[in-house]
Image 1 (cartoon, helix red, strand yellow):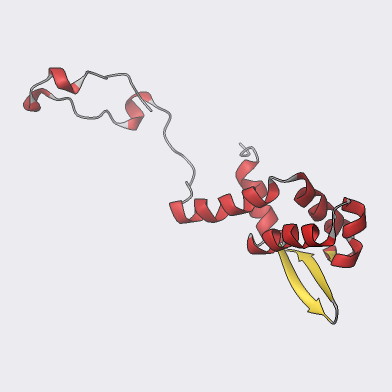
Image 2 (cartoon, rainbow, N blue to C red):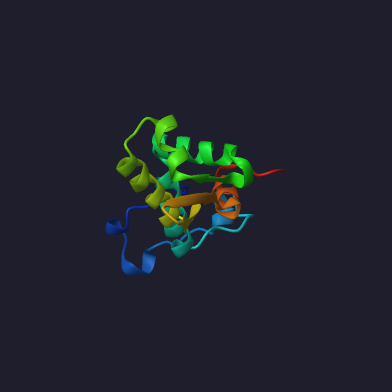
Length: 129
């Protein structure tokens, strides 16, 4: 926020109050698109889902499988957590749109959604000049 021309408004008469300076007067102008509030809320859900080491490990394990898809039965032992805990983490990743889930008989299979990961990565990547 620019503070170049700040004058306490309590000391000024209503007609003497300064107008806000243009952002270009003292600040760097915005030159790229800024995300909308609803997009920010959706993306925050994705980042929250990624904020747990077990969930990051699950994503890594699924990405390492053929076709970036894995059965829940293949994920429990490598992560070292109980099956219900793994299922909870996978559910959060599905809700965030990072994984998809497909039931095949007794087992659930999880697959990465590359577009979601690319969108999240794009927000934290340095802009190319």
